[in-house]
Amino acid sequence: MLLNRVKTKNVKQGFTFVEFLLVIAAIAILMIVLVEVIRPDEKLAATRNTERRADVNTILNAVYQYALDHSGQLPSAIKDIPLEICKTNAEDCSDLADLSVLTKDEKYLYALPVDPIGESADGTGYEILRTPGGRVNVIAPYAELGIKIDVYK
Image (tube, rainbow, N blue to C red; front, side, top):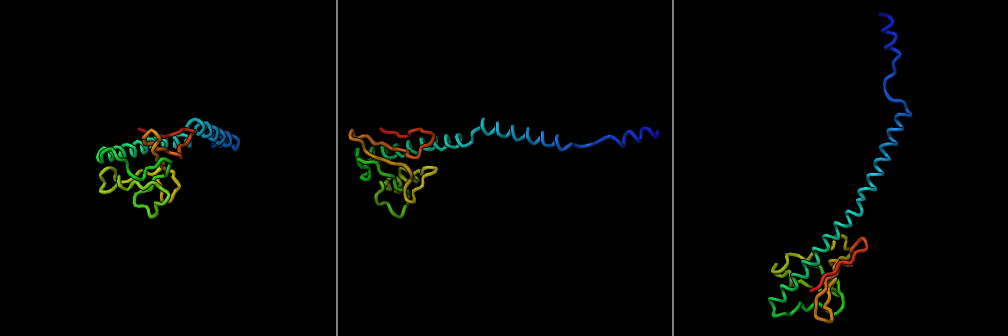
């Protein structure tokens, strides 16, 4: 009986410092690998680009719906040069394309879409212009990952 007690008292329990460091190093390596595989910055940028594609199509469709209802006339704010679109209810739309006719009485749009990271105080972050051929072109200049986002009809 006495021998059994002595043997149990000499048994070590727990981790050594070296074992603890190995576990921490393994966790760190796994985290680095996961971040590289997942690439959250690229996925977020791709998500924002998807939103931009939807936004420029929404704006373009609203412009053409307006033109259908007004005998083919486009909103007068659309010029032959690219202008940033003014936000809904913005205070100052000078030097911007004021498309408030699209949001008036919420007939075509409730509000003009705004770029996810657009930095303009009064602009949406999207640009619009009428091409020499008479088409309307809506551009997302803040597109990420080297992608060009513009639609026209």
